[in-house]
Length: 263
Image (tube, rainbow, N blue to C red; front, side):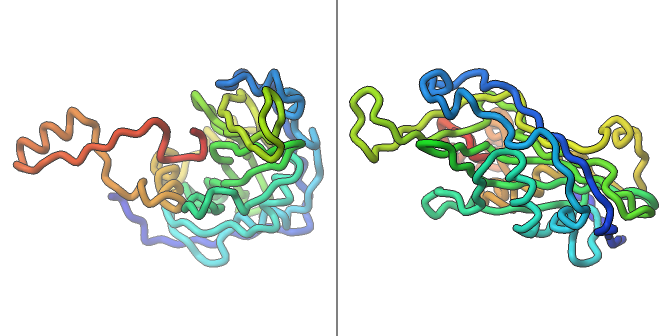
């Protein structure tokens, strides 16, 4: 595994301002048609289409120390919640996951050069909506800092695409359910996103040191789930390894994902 010893510091001019736009698309589907039966889900949209922030809000995503590429740190709550409130109302970082290990908010230095630092981050949160709550699979993003100007060059926070990218819990008496009973569903929404700046210029940057986005995403996943620290291998590879090493295969069958909060 590639390791880096060079460390950098990343700072922001807290007096600068950052304009962030919020965008959402209608929910495409849910397995039990909750998005057609439940008004709060049918009308789900970003809380504020555009908002101005002091750059100090984004300090919450920066490391409080010198870091090297591939190093992770915990995001501070204050700035994360401020941005999540623009995305959807009533966010909470204290998820109702029955004591699981998926709560948290982490960032990772993905790349840097003399002028820019590219930080990837991942947040797990839920949002209270009328008669229930909405839980994205994850909230993932990039924060690119202009190190020379100490300003935000690019910011994106979004619910990643996936066959299912959110769960919902609905307290309803529909279909004869008793009051207080919560029923669940999962579905897909094409876009729930905050963005500032242009990604095109960031993609053209040449970095001094970097890891791939996939590598950074894996490092962040390991901060949330112990299951991601296991060296999983495809079944066909496991068969070859088992025969070569004369070891038994430990196989696990699951009906959902081990790496996010979508069913």
